[in-house]
Image (cartoon, rainbow, N blue to C red; front, top):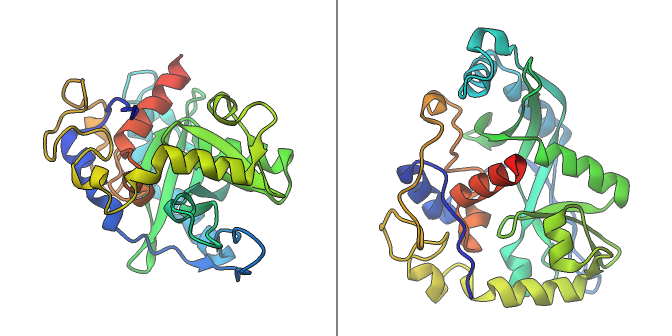
Length: 287
């Protein structure tokens, strides 16, 4: 049975995210050479210059002003008192790769989707800034509640130094992969692969079974169900009401809570929209 997750973002942005499988995010990457017999290649890594540019974009005055509005959106703190700051360095965020799911020889387990920076308000709220390179400049394209991206990058590095930390957005699970093993970093991942993790081969078998029929150009995608829609343009999630807009006040200027760019390719290609990811993430934090 296909699992459809609930919606959380404005309907037009959800539709754009679903169309985002054709969107190319022009990240500046250092791409390692793959060996035909060494198993999956290491995913592309951002260059030092890319990280620096992403961090600069995250700390730009316009971004900080939008962060103030973001942190004040539910009345926890006033816009003037939010006083947001960006902490630490930008980290690369990898999502489960459709090529790996499809069984392409040498394909990395995950691919780089964006760089993330941690933002904090004066009252302790946390958010993740997603940055991508577009038309030669780095831009913040999304704000997500919490610090999942930077936190799991740190946890994964501690658990398996040199491993690849990646996200399986379909079930909101975080892992670290290395030495032909996939190890869980959160409860969702433990439910998927067990507390001790699993072999790379067993993980590939699991995701191929779960998502192999939902890849680009599949009947599933062409039916309009990618992301949980019952029919193209229905504007309604399977078995649920209209999308709920909880961030209208922040959907102005260059930074929005709902991004039709960051991560859209990986999400749409594997059967989940950015809307579902954000709502599921928010529900887990509140729960």
